[in-house]
Length: 195
Image 1: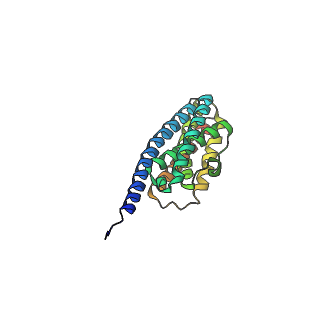
Image 2: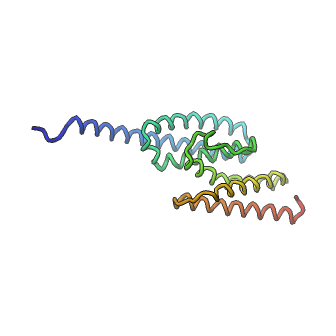
Image 3: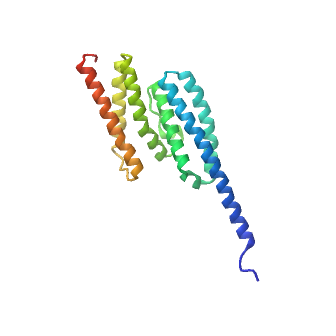
């Protein structure tokens, strides 16, 4: 009489191996998304929206593939590399769309979870701060004020959340500092009579 079902162990082994293989694939594809996100942000900072648009098309294809893989096994969503990559994707797409259209897309429009969206929009404020400094150097003071107002609005909305996750809490605290830097920049411009 057999005490252990060999068939059961074979099925578990297959499930275990499939998860491990898919995990490695998700990690690799996450690195691709991370790299493209950084390239999109860099292109937008250089005002090369044509290049950014090309990269956006590329990242959307890669996101679709990784999303399909993750939807087949939701445990894959918990992989740190995936979480970081999708947060960076959100940041890059939000930044691109904001600079191009002066619009902040919703999490539904991006087809991402609330957590991924929040990670991305929190990081967006740092990129907007860098863009404002760049614009101030080009005497585009109206847009500097628009960016400050946008970051203030994002901060106001984020204040409604009770971030208990220490990583999210720490990231959220950076928004306050990004806003303070922008307020200081706008004040400095006012004191110099630029606006």
